[in-house]
Amino acid sequence: MILLMESLSAQTPPSNFVWTCGTTEEEASESAQTATPESPICTDPNAVKYIRVAFHFIRAEHFFVRSVYDDCLVNPPVYRTYIGYGNFTANSDGNGDLTYNGYQRAEDIVAKANEELAQNQKQWRETPGISYPATAPANPLRYVLTGVYFHANDIAFDPDFSTAAIHTAYDVGGNEVLDVYCINNEYEPWNGQGLGGASTNKYVFLNDYFIYLRPNCREWSTQFSGSSLNHEIGHSLSLRHTWDVDDLCNDTPKGYIYDQIPPTGGCIQNQYANCWKYDPGVPGCPKKPCDEWHKVSNNIMDYNQYYYHAYTECQLARIHNSLTGQGNTYIHSCNGCAPSNAFFDIRGPVKVCPEQSPTYVWLEGQACHNENRYLIEICTVDDSAPDDCLSGYWNSGWQTGTVGRINLATLYNFLPNRTYRISLKVDNTECPGSHEYVRLLYTEDCDVPVPPCCIGLSVAPNPFNAELTIYWEAPEEALLSFSLVHLFTNQITPLRSPAPTPVGPQQQTWSTSALPSGNYVLHTWYAGQHYSQNLVKL
Ligand SMILES: [Zn+2]
Image (cartoon, rainbow, N blue to C red; front, top):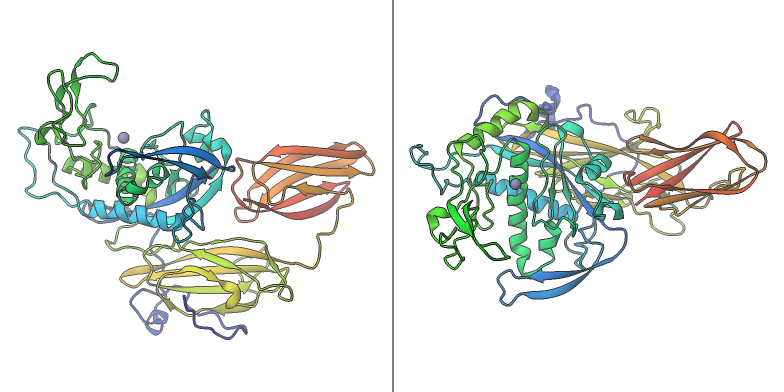
């Protein structure tokens, strides 16, 4: 990653903030450009439609031990023991590999899913009397990754914790972003299945890590998770399983009727086969389900695990109807090319103490999508008007390539006790419309300790995770209240309503598992005085 080093003195912001891809800055400045319209309605059923997806990797707060069974391409199967937090992190694969992380995983799964969509297959099992096109119809559905988030939450691994509760805790973008939750929960050990929210505020679950952990399944796991993503998003766009229910499509026949031998023995006659694998050795009593190729299905809403899948004309029409109806808010663009999307994470508040150690301000831009150039802008702002640059303006100029991970402190001289506005614009020069993402960064002086509050306030732990305890000792009885404010979303979480505190040492503990991770300010009001303190939730 090489960035052109520019003068750190204040520069004039470019007069035109959004350039059209493929044009020079001079051409662009002649006519002001606007970004791609939000949620366009794509009335043309053949127009390629990109819908927004965000990935969430949920890991445990404590190490756990799992037995992993690997039967991919190996016989006999291999058993291994996994010890770890149970998911990809921002910095590693959660399994000792620092060269692969959750950002890359999310991009890889989305890329595989899009590859499958772009290579729609001809339906194998056909309904007699229905005419099928000579070649598979084009599937115009695609995904654009709009964010990757990491959460640590033991409660999410509890058998009683519902998928809906996870979505309530971590939803981003409401009806504009489809949330994909990756969690390896042994109580819901599906291989990549999930629950599709078929109505608004859509979300799906993937149990991707469970397969990734098997060394011999690793390469296949990306394709399988991409297919599983397509299957689950198919549910959320009104598609149903084809083999055993009426899916409202005539061109997706139900499964072959066979006689099933259950694991407990006996024979259950006249079952619908959900054949995902040609297997002449499968038992039957006597009718076998998958011993001939005409019984095997490659439809996306069946469970075939080894081939790119088929979406039929009827299924594609149902997806189109869904995306011109209730699902329209999820559409990012329908101009037929791969839109760029800017996203980055940055951890703050950053302590700036150049005399003691170098400053690190990591911009984690690995979840940016489809970009081939990017532009970073930094300036100081006032919290009350975060869009208005006050001073210290700097920009990187357009840089070629993908964003990746950048230490901004090597490019910009951050000062303590400031609020910085950091903007990232990305561009795919093959696809018009730049995309911008902005976050605020707070800096602190490492030499100045937080002045103690009048009531001996202390908070532990900081950073906090599942729980937060506040200790105080009031010299006199007076009204006391606490609230937490998330610095990025400004979401306010009241901890204690104003109430008289007794004199003497007190403590109170709150469960904070459901709070999103990030930077918080703890606001304390005591006897009419206000105090604030920075906290970090992991
Ligand atoms: Zn399903």
